[in-house]
Length: 358
Image (cartoon, rainbow, N blue to C red):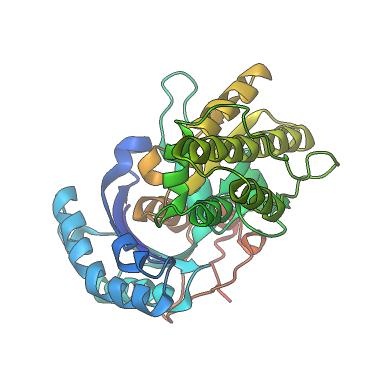
């Protein structure tokens, strides 16, 4: 199947074509992402109404561009996948409306995809020349601006939540910490770049909730620690970099400690990491070293597929469409959607059951 994927859950408009006849990385025929960073920068965060309107403006041109890059006509598409949730309801409705309309006009099946399942499955598009693609069972760390979760993956669609953040997600903590130190929006990548110039160990912050059992996270207190350190410092350029490095080290250490505990709890040695913070270089190096030490491995999507994109939606949708799952003709979006409620792909392939969105 050649599946068109549409992502519009927040402030990126993503479109891609995934071809199941060319598995792995070669299956991604083309993808394009338009970011609304410049639009929202003056507000210091995403304005939902502006995000929705920008998706309306950009989505169809991106569909045309992606099909041209894939060398395909629109009538050569065999299915359409779109982000049905979670996300901003207005933004989701734009993508869902376009996707359902295209599927109806082309008389092809459509499927609503869980945004976080798209992130979770994105590393499965990559081809490791030695080990091949990761296959379940494994543990997934979903780490972004909106989510920090540890998921035991027993199969496609068979997910068990092991732990999650009790307050700020890791990416949200990056952004808010950057903002309190005066870094421009979006602050997370700016803070990570600044940390490269920081002195290791000059500022050491707590590794939250690592001194007790459990797999949940909390980053709100860490953010407060940084604020106090910043206010009490000389606020020079080097001090700013040193604080950024101390904050990044604390987040990376915390995530690595919890990931190792999750691998122990799940009884496996493969950790799959996705979401925007999954592009962080120091996090990647730390998790790769941790996994290698226990005889396992850490798997990541390429950095361009860590943030929101249509490729992950096209790929996840292709797996479910191949399993016989379909969404009905109504335009459904689910702003809050529990991933544990998703049907299992293997079970649906055997039973022929379809996907029903609430």
